[in-house]
Length: 151
Image (cartoon, rainbow, N blue to C red; front, side, top):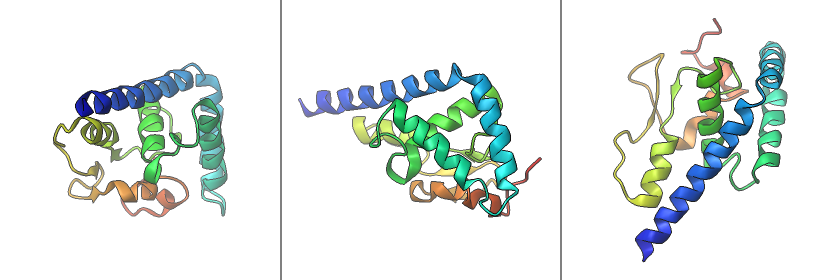
C-alpha cells in the first residue's frame, strides 16, 4: 500500500514538472526577452539575481510555492534546465550543470536506487555538486564560478 502511495506521489511530482515545462515552452518569445534581461543584469551589481527572482515568481504563479523553487531550488533547476536545453536559451541555470533532480525525486518516491548521487559540472568533469549546493549554479552565485564562461 505504501509503495502505491509513493508511486502516486512520484507521478504527481512528474506531472507538475512536465506541466511547468510545457507552459514555459509555449512562451518562447517571452523567454527570449527574459534571457536578454538576465544577461544584461548579470553584468551589473545584482549579478542577475533580480531577473532570476522574477522568473521564480512567475513559475510559482503557474504552480505553487511548495513546488517552485523546491528544496534547495531543485525543482527550479529541473524545470528551467529542461526548458533551456529545449530552447537553447540561458534562463538562469548554468548550462554546464548536469543535474540529477529528476532521478533524485524518482528515487525518493519509488525507492529506485540512484545511478548518479550528485549533479555534475560538465565544464569540470570531476566536480560533483550536492543537491544542497545547486544554488551555486544559479544567479547571483553562478557568475562567480571559476568553471563557467559566458561565451
